[in-house]
Length: 163
Image (cartoon, rainbow, N blue to C red):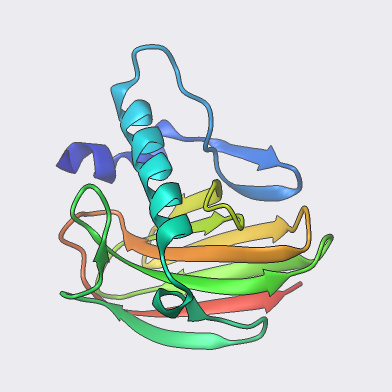
């Protein structure tokens, strides 16, 4: 399990998704169990995101920087790692960049559509993960802050900007 989380970036290359750049999600090679596990985890998260009340999602606005922490008591992924969930409203054609920085854990950043379906994900090297995207439609989007390693905890800075 530990090796699976630590090797996310190794199994997924960069690709264009619409006009979004980040780690590829959606391609599963036959026999690649780690990809299937991630798909199952993503499906579980999508169901959880739809069932989660609005109170459990922290709003973030374009131009805002949030100081946060992954810590005991936060929500947990299927693999036991902690995550924080943010929500923002975006417009079709809007160009955004999301930065996640931490000196205390290796960041893993995910952008999801209003249905909780992963659009992009990126594991950060040297304490910084970044996603760039031209939003395909107007509506709500979710940002998940997570760690590459299950035991990853600590403070972070999340920034949502318009390009």
